[in-house]
Length: 194
Image 1: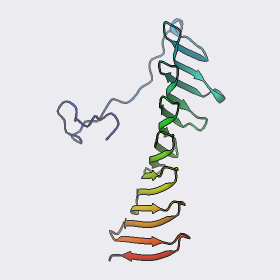
Image 2: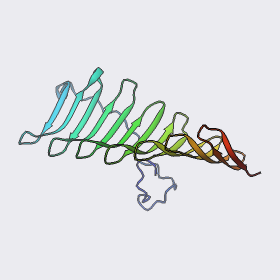
Image 3: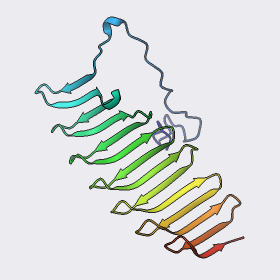
Image 4: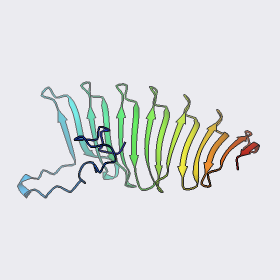
């Protein structure tokens, strides 16, 4: 699903029928000087004084915004890094991150964590725009990966030690193949259809 596209087509339009999504973001016009407030931190509190939000400069003067629940637990965090990466974290009521989104020059990543915050699934778009889906077991070990690039598409299955053991793919020439690997990575069996 494209960003800004609800899947409903919008105003009766079918997906792919020319609907281009929301207009591009543009900088807001500069307000007059007497309407500008400058600070290094803003805190949003309820009438009773409970903290519900903050917008502040963190380490190395990087901006961060946090939204808190009614018990003052952080639930949503938006931040920037020195490397220029933007990140969003959704945090559960126990304070554990469950969903993370990171976007930078080298990759865009969506990570899903379980109730213990162990990574279980990731969707990655690398610097060349090539996607991969990674699936992890309950210990956080990578167990399966699907990726697509200019040379074809592949599914790789890993053992509990993280070693690739099965590879299935269709290369750019359209030939499908199966690789069965030993724990040391040596090929045990290979099948390629001509």
